Image (cartoon, rainbow, N blue to C red):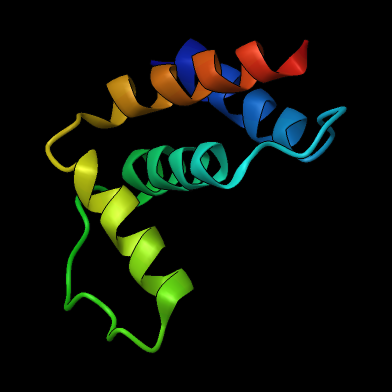
Length: 85
């Protein structure tokens, strides 16, 4: 458990220093996996249609609902590693 948490924290740090900015769908995936790993399943109401960014983030997070924290951490790590190029 400690190893995956350390790897996750390293991936979070690495995500801030990527060579290229990922596309929006990849950014949403990064956000969703991070939130799932750190906060668990999405809760609350979906933002209204005037908050398009909030809605996109909510929807992306909702797509990974039910994913365990360790699994979300590993998927986040794998995604960041694939973007390091």
